[in-house]
Image 1: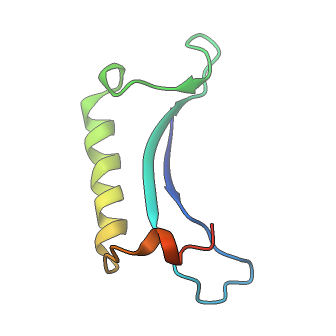
Image 2: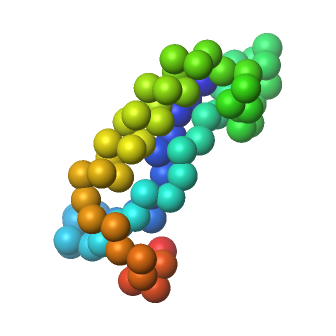
Length: 74
């Protein structure tokens, strides 16, 4: 399983562009279970809890802007 914290992105080299955290997803990577989005109910609870904790920590490290979608370049 691969855990992904998705965000709006930024240019390289970074030019101080605002970015927003948009999603937390879990992707299956094994051959036996197939590939694609994993259901949270099928994952170990500790994996979901730790991934969510990291997601919240990333979001909490900055300020919320209710107008982020208009300001995003992506």
